[in-house]
Image (cartoon, rainbow, N blue to C red):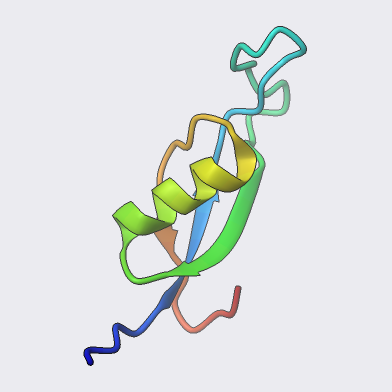
Length: 66
């Protein structure tokens, strides 16, 4: 059995409006979720699953906990 270590990732996303369309961030700062995943691609997929919104990126957080 192979165990893959997880790392912390911060994933900013575009929230949706009441009609389900992505809305612009008035402040210029997007909300984010922070989670643990094996790699950036898995982090983006997990963030999309959790938020239901388009995920912009997965930024690795060095030395932090989710």
